[in-house]
Amino acid sequence: MSKVGEGRRSLVLALLCAAQFMVVLDFSIVNVALPAIRDEFGLSREGLQWIITGYVLTFGGFLLLGGRVADIYGRRLVFVAGLVLFAAASLAGGLASSAEVLIGARAVQGLGAAAISPAALSILTTTFREGADRNRALGVWGGVAAAGFSSGVILGGFLTELLGWEWVMFVNVPIGLAAAAAAPLLLDGDAGEAVRRTLDVPGAVFVTAGLVALVYALSGAGGTGLASPRFLVSIGVALAFLGGFWAIESRSRDPLVPLGVFRRGTLTGANAVGLLIIATAAPMVFLVTLYMQRVLGYSAIEAGLAWLPHGLTSIFASHIGGRLATRVGVKPTLLGGLAVLATSLVLLSRVSAGGGFWADLLPGTLLVSFGIVLPLVAVSVAATSGIGDAEQGLASGLLSTTQQIGAALGLALLVAISVTRTEALAASGVPQTEALAQGFRYALAFGACFPVLGALIAVFSLHEKRLS
Image (cartoon, rainbow, N blue to C red; front, side):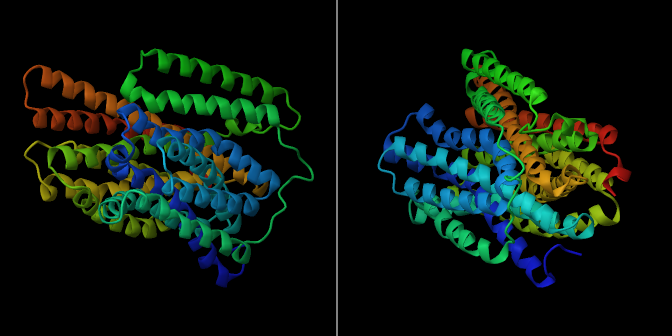
């Protein structure tokens, strides 16, 4: 039985999924518009990278804080504030008259997203009780997230070519404002724990600074290399701040993150597996899209349409993901999904310079829909099971943070592998198109190792009885 009236459950879930769709959409929709933004402002490659990095830094760095603030001061309050901030930043970005304003707007978008994502997930897990109801809701949530990522590529191509790059920002405004207006009508108010708790400011400062430095290091590693001064200094700063955070929390009477949560094997294992799932999925979409455009010569719209079957299949996968977790168990669903994810990467690693959509792309992109959605649903169930309502924001923030780090880590490693292989082949006289295709093949094949590692972690850390 749900914790809210039966008639409101679907509306609440639709609201939360709409907000999550907007956040996930923003990852990929802007990528397609980057060439047009470069031409508009005359940006260098490094300047263009900050359009992405500005968003990634604040989103990844503030996720954990956003989740904990939602626990303390109220999930609905943080959710609505994040939606309004995200919509306002999107409007400012679309109206930007300079690259600096656009980058600043993207950073503020990331702050809004860092409030929306963990607050929305914690509202879901406190609205739907553990068991079949929550599993089905998380299935829809996972499917929307997967579909949002591929939909961004589709919408980005159409909006950029037909209306201009500004509309990849403007499209968020009506979604965000409509969701913010609907939230007070559909969501129960929650006062959080502010009466009994205060925010651990030193812990918040140290963990946020450490996560920002970590995401900054990983987001640039693909271009600068793992031995570059930027990477080494940033990692050193991240470790110093995160070490300081650990010391602060171990002595705090009212910690931002009770360190005891990391002794829960199921939660820790689920977060580790979630990191590896996104470390596989995010670079896969990036690399396959580049293959479509740089090797097969697809336009932005054609590349977007090529992802349409994946998006539609993700919706179908979301309907069965929660049911599988309920009927056969969380762990079997997770392991089966990881096996499908690894298989799909192997299929996609067959791409070639003379390849085509039907033989080289369609089988893998269809299969990977199940390989992403099924394990994500299982991980979300595992990471939030057995957690009290007062800590659901923390659990959601941890899961979102590890997945964001996974995206940055996966992109850094797989892009570096692709570039290194491509440059080596090009230097030996291999034609550019063939060298590019071989680079993508190597990176995608290596990416298949991540879900295998995730399966090993799941086998030893997740225990079905604790998830029942």
